[in-house]
Image (cartoon, rainbow, N blue to C red; front, top):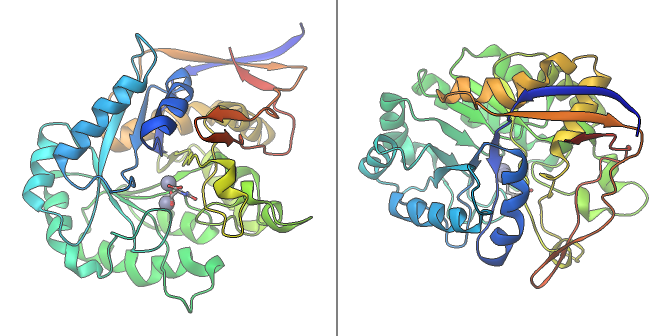
Length: 348
Ligand SMILES: NC(=O)N[C@@H](CC(=O)O)C(=O)O
Ligand SMILES: [Zn+2]
Ligand SMILES: [Zn+2]
């Protein structure tokens, strides 16, 4: 076996992850715990995780789905609604049971019906969060029918995010899964209170992957991939080492049957290949030395968490990883994200 390169980093964390529940949770949790030390767990279950006691119960079911002896740490979030009680949020944050709140504009994405319609209705919660230093995680897309889907992130920044920033300048905000140069520019224009997660798929595909040569449902996610110039802006931001950009896989498992449909759902499952994809992206950008910042250092710094003590080694091999096989999940099968280049890097 010929090995040309190896790199070792602190164990990475995933700052945006969908683990689902039930049989899907059991199927996907081991892929995350195999590579990641911690993950921010998204609350968009049906029904959503809206109160601290639900987050605690969900964390317990995640822990039960982990392999024996796993030290993986799920960091729980609550789904922000117009009924969210600031006192519950404060208590959950103080006890360490809840790490952040997730804002979904109502109807923006998978399982977001209970989301926020009028941002001002949640200002009392944002006020409390600002006071205690609790991060607000944002699915940053407007949902107005008249706004083109490719413009929804940029319009959200103008219409919603700038107002929230003005009202709550000390509130920690993470723009989740940014997909545009506008998102990058907005984060850069702010101070250290604002950061963004970036996914492996938005670093490697543009909208052609989804639409050329027939409709490709396994490349459909929200926010949708944009044009190539936006992808390049994301690569520039992720590989720059700037502490405001870090990894959130947004791995969002759905059965193939739900995606390969007349109304296919949004979400890409990628955790098992994330580190391989990222090593390729950073190597191609000539920035392999910044990979650890993106995956393992910038996120904990923003969240005020300690760095992982353990490490991960990645090795570049001559033979590519085979990801053609579907994952068997109760009730069906699931496709792994294919960035359409050979995955030579693998986790040792
Ligand atoms: N990213 C997606 O396309 N889908 C996510 C929801 C989300 O993160 O917006 C899901 O839960 O399936
Ligand atoms: Zn989202
Ligand atoms: Zn997501």
